[in-house]
Image (tube, rainbow, N blue to C red):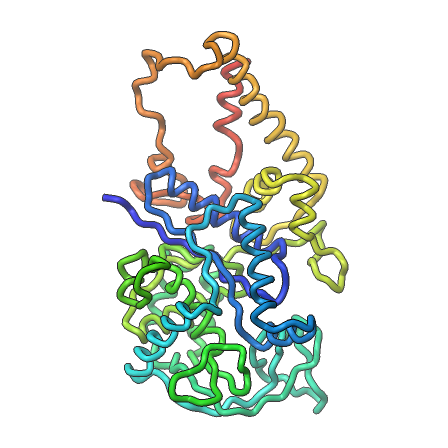
Length: 428
Ligand SMILES: [Zn+2]
């Protein structure tokens, strides 16, 4: 039986061009997708763009272009970069398309019909850059600042629709307690503590924000990120030329086996999203993995610090494979990682140029010298089946399970060029 493997990157927010963090997640997802394809799995790798919201509307206004043109241009940057670096995605979903809106409405109607939506008043300090309300921030009466963006928050007092997350306290507590659901294990406790503190209903609509999907029967309301962007994972699945509805998504690869994301959005994927799916009577993703953040030479990267690493410039300078190799080989997957130029050069020279490069070079010369530039015929000892990665186990997995260390453990069990080095030694 063909094993299905649906995995997703986040749908990247298009208020700016791709940064190195999006590249990192996407490269990792691509490596996993390729690995599963080698196992014979029917893989669907989903990536795409989250294109609604106030921040995008404001960025477009600042750039002096219509919002639709702005998101088309930005989504184009992502698609072009993924093509350039050889990402093997099967779907590229955009949340500003009519097909997406259709599915968002069907999903909302189900959740509404099941009694999990209510109106409510949303009052508080809002960070437009985070696109979220901030808790308890009114020290000494002045305007509070967002700690992440170091910018003043805006006061909001508006009627919104709320999703009744509180209805799902028990099932979500049970879900996040399962070892297999959240990775790496170090982050599971964090999410459990959040759930134990008591789940609160959250706002799913905004008023006076025209750049968004309209909420049925609620004039002036558009959907806020959760009931819009998260649905993109489902929207992506049905064949683009076929029917677009939840029933079709269920036969086209939903539920996903893995949501691969950065640690900053783990809570939304491991708590909000499964509760929304429960509310719509839909099956849950099997696993959510929140990887760490990247720093550069020991420092946080940021525009204000002037030390961001522009992926396009980086690929132009050193090529795609060295970056892919370095990020996946050197950074312990799941943990925060530091990009260091010297280590990058050492690793790329040692692993790629010396070990892998020499192996390829020697193999090609032997083929040329002794086998007329061809692959030689199978020898007598070649009848034994090659070792299958599926049968290799690592310490973090039970026997017989499909193994891919990055998805199962934060270890580096297979993340070294050992097999190449072993073959290289055969020639010495
Ligand atoms: Zn902020």
